[in-house]
Length: 137
Image (cartoon, rainbow, N blue to C red; front, side, top):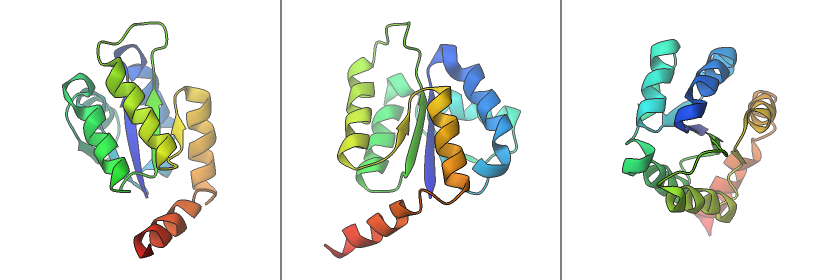
C-alpha cells in the first residue's frame, strides 16, 4: 500500500509532527510526497519518501496520476483552510480523483490520525482487494 503526503506551507510543521508520531506505522508503506513536504519529512525522520514536484509546480497532478493508475491507496493532505492557494483548481482535481477512485483522503490532522490508526489495524486492506478486482475487469 502507498500513501501520499501533502501539506500546505502553514501545515508542514503539523505534517512533520504527524510523521514523527506515526513513523513506526508509516515506515511499513510506500510513501510519496510533494517536493518540499517530502524533503522536510525526510530531514526530520528516517522515512524513505518518493519525492515528486512541489504542489504548485505539478506535484498535486503527479499524485493525481498515481491515483488514476491505482498506485496510491491513501492521501493525507493537510490543507491550510484559511489561506487562498494559487493552485486551488489542482487541489480540487486531486480531491475529486480521490472520490472517483475511492481513495480515502484526510484533509486535517484528526482524519489523518483516524486513517493511519485504521491502516495499522488492517482496516484498509479492502484497497488491495479492490485493485485486484479492478485489474480483472
